[in-house]
Image (cartoon, rainbow, N blue to C red; front, side, top):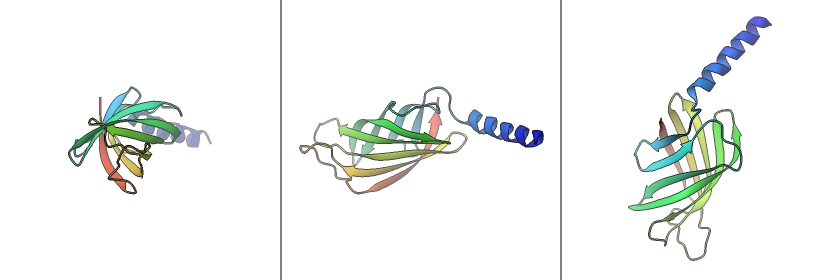
Length: 133
């Protein structure tokens, strides 16, 4: 039993040491999406800023954390382009894959205001991301 407990403790500590403790930035492999202030110790209600570029437009937005688990974070996002005419909202899941590597899945539901347009409404985007200090 003690051997099993020791093995389990080693495994948990190994996984925890690979996950970020301090706030860091996740950057997509394309370099077009950046999630700022990411850390392993988020709680529901935390807000993470992000930027992304889609179709030549730069969007700035926030992710509001709704759930956390073993190596993943889920939340709702909303953004708006710098021109103010486009904006999208939806759900995002960020999953830890291995040291410094993450996958984010963005389910784009539509726009959150009647005067904004969201050309990506109804689509899903999967981004491979890397952690940077």
